[in-house]
Amino acid sequence: MRHRLPLPSLFILALLLCGRLPTGQAAETVPLAGAGELVGAVFTLADQRLAVMPDVAAAKWASGQPITDASREAIVIRAAGDGATALGLGRTPVEALFELQVRLARETQEALHARWRRDGYHEPGPVPSLANVLRPQLDRLTRELMQALYLAAPSSAGQDLAAIAAEKLPRQRWSDSARAEFVAALAQVRLEGARTPARARAAGVLRIGTPGDYAPFATLHDDRLEGSDVDLAVRLAATLGLRPVFIASRWGTLVDDLQADRFDLAIGGISITEARRTRASFSLPLARGGKTAIGRCRDRDRLATWAAIDHDGVRIIENAGGTNEGFARRQLRHAALLIHPDNRTVFAELSADRADVMFTDDTEIALVTHQRPELCRLLSELYDPAEKAILLPHDGGWTEEVDGWLRQALAQGLPAALLAEHLAR
Image 1 (tube, one colour):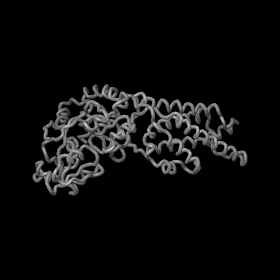
Image 2 (cartoon, rainbow, N blue to C red):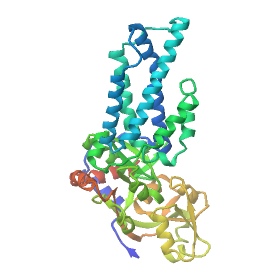
Image 3 (cartoon, rainbow, N blue to C red):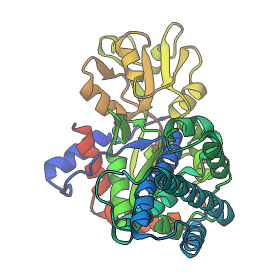
C-alpha cells in the first residue's frame, strides 16, 4: 500500500524557479451550470421569442402584411428539424416544439390585431423593421434555443418541467394551456445521435462535466468555477473553436453522467482508476500523486503514523462518492469514518475540531495547508499512487481529439504551469 513519490508541489516549485513554465494570461473563470439551469434556459429563450411577437404584430399592422406566412413558418420548422439532426436530437420532437412556438406566435399576433381593429392602434414608440431588425432577432433566438435544447435534453427527464415552466414563462404571455403544451413538447426532446467532436462542432459548444469541489483542479468560488483543469479545458475548447459550457456533476455519479451523454468529457482532478476504466476512457495523464493525511498542526506528534491514525477514537472525514471515500473504506480498520457531502467545506470540519484526519491527494493538501495554516500534512508517505486525467467516453473519437491537442500542451508544460499558478493562489 505504501509508496514514495516526488511531491507535485516540489516539482512545480522547481519549474517556477527555473523559469521553464510557459507564460500567458490565465483563463477567465466561468459559471457552473446545473441541470435545472440548463432546462430553465430553454424556457427563458422560448419566452424571449414570444416576447418579440408584439413588435412583429405592429410591423405587420403598419405594413398591411398578413399575420400568417405559411411558407416562412414551414421554413422555420424544417430548419429546426435539420438543426436537430445535426445536433443528434430527435427531429420529430424538435419540429413539434417549433410548430407549437409558431402557432403561439401566430395566436399572439392575431389577438393583438383583433384588439387594434376594435380599439384602434395605440402602441407607443417607433415600429421596428420586420426584415432588418425583428427577423434577424428571431433567427438569433432560434439558434440559441436549438443550442439550449442540445444542452438540456440529456437532463430534462430528471427535472420538474412544470415547476420550471411556472417560474420562467410569465402569465402575461403564457396561458396555462400553452405552458402545459410546451412542457409536454419539451419532455419528448432527446439526444439520439452519436457523441462525436463533429456533433459538438455543429452545436458550437464543448460540454464539460465536473463536480467543481476539488481545488486546485476545479472548484466553485462565489458562483464562478476556477482551477487548473478548468483553465486547461477552456484552452481545449478554444482550440476546437467551441464555447466551453461547464456542467455540474457529483463524484458518485460522474461516470454515470458521462455515459448518459450529459457532457462530452469531465475534468476536475479525476484519478485514473480501473473501476472507471471499465466504463470510460482517459486522456493522457495531466498530473501524478497519491493519497496522504491532513489534520490539525497541533496533532502532528499524536497522529504521526498510520497506526496512530487508524485507531479507536480518531475521526476520519472524507468527501462523498470519490476515490478518497473508497480509499478510507478499503484501508481503515479501527478509526471512525465520517462522510461529508461537500468537498468544498470538508476542511473546515478539521479546523473546527469536528473531525481529526482526512485522506486526500497530496496536491490538494499542498494547497489547503497554504490556505489554512492551522492544518498540516501528517504523513510523509503517499498511498495509492494515481495519475489524473480528463475523463472521456469510450467511443465517438474524443480520445484522439483530446490527446492530439494534449500532447503539444504537455510538451510545452502547460498543465504543470496551470497547476502551479493555482497552487500559488
